[in-house]
Image (cartoon, rainbow, N blue to C red; front, side):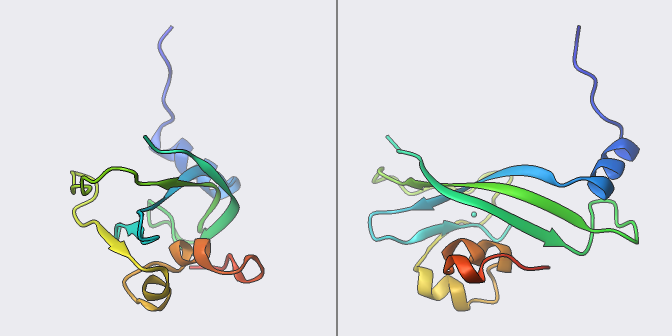
Length: 124
């Protein structure tokens, strides 16, 4: 039996009624810089659970936003090779944490991974 995918209307109902679960990868190099895209042998390290709130949704429907429950994992980039952009990530850059925290090019939800636990989270 092949899987049945949700219709666009069904996905919109899920977004309106329930949080979406996501996994974010935090990738650091040997200089402790973080790989960020304007669109974020490796050993995984648990970073925690985060919540991201957006006032909008994928369909542009009024009256509800999008709520993500995100499982954060951190990886060390052990390779000497630099990551290359692809179809989903046209720009990649290593950022010092202090610089990304003050940049208007980095989304507030991405900044939350690098703030003290008491100040994480927020609405966008």
